Length: 132
Image 1 (spheres, rainbow, N blue to C red):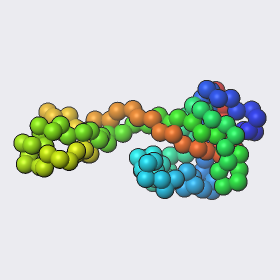
Image 2 (image 1 turned 90 degrees about the vertical axis):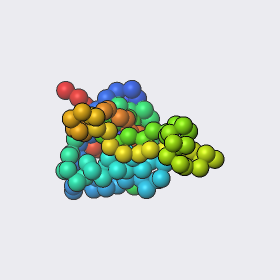
Image 3 (image 1 turned 90 degrees about the horizontal axis):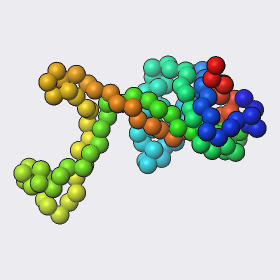
């Protein structure tokens, strides 16, 4: 799409191929590690399309017009604070805050449980297609 045709708040289909170099979506920013992980897995799985709701226009990516938006995907990865009482029961020092990270599983079946999660990504405008 042409940059001036993109409307903030609208959802578009992002379509790219390996020829388009989707690796350029990787940010390398530690604050964006989860998004980079999802993009990396997306690249490994050869997924070439996803829906993006545009939140900002007028961006550039590698010198090309781009937009930023929200991409919703499924994940089983979780990160949650460890309550101080639990840390104490585990014999951990009380002057430190802890975070537990891992995979969400059903306690009875052991099956991995996925949940929706949102990611902020910037993509070239030329990858956008109107939803039909």
